[in-house]
Length: 329
Ligand code: SF4
Image (cartoon, rainbow, N blue to C red; front, side, top):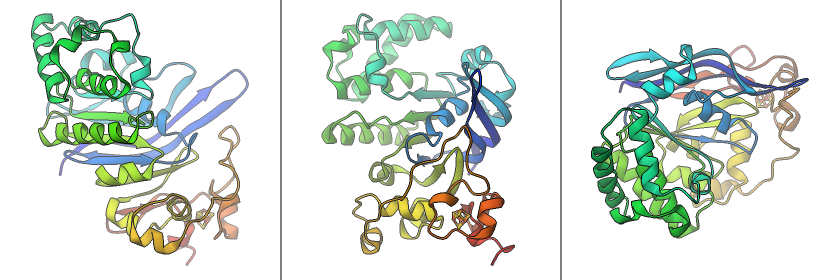
């Protein structure tokens, strides 16, 4: 499989007057063509910042400090992190990469008709408005909405319909990569299922090639992801195939995280439910060494001083934990 997106050692911090929040701190991963990568972690672990970094939606006080984001567009690899936001917006947003931001369905302006968003998209990409409206009608039908609802105001649609309208509009130009940030968290169970089905149909039909699905909900992501990234305190602690991580999470945080949710996985059920002790660390002044060390049941001396690198410890499995490093065991 070809790489669609590569994120290399990226650091993105919120620089406020007297403090600096290290929300994404040395993160590397890739998304291949034709795959769904889930990004999971507790609130405040940097997931949403990561989605903005991948989308290159860098707005003060967020600062792209270091690293590279490379996106395959029209068969060519483009280092989008070396471009300014305006250039990325013009050349890539909507066409190559799109985002359903957190609470998207509530972010729609109640006084703006759905079709106005399509018209705005056409204008910003210098595309014929009528042509794009025709495409939008078709896309609305594909996601189970009536094309004439494009003339409606958001408040005239239910929450589930609004979320489907958002994904329909976000994908009109068939972008390769769709970033979905907690897209189902505000929906009821029935609408969650409908939304996930729409999402997977879009991938199957090739409307989008790959999906980065950000959530705190493991039960949702396990239904659709091929691989899963687990984030803790601004860092990736485990990146593995879905089935491997469900069967046997390697990182101690992944282990407690999986055991702290109710899931139908027999392997997880067998291990029983546990609660993660302590609170997530403060990202202004994160713990030394391994950031999970104050909460880790397997902490060792080295963990307090030295930061474990994210390394491949089994084929296709990357973990950042000294338990799996030759230097220690
Ligand atoms: Fe726990 Fe040490 Fe592994 Fe961190 S590096 S997760 S503290 S064992």
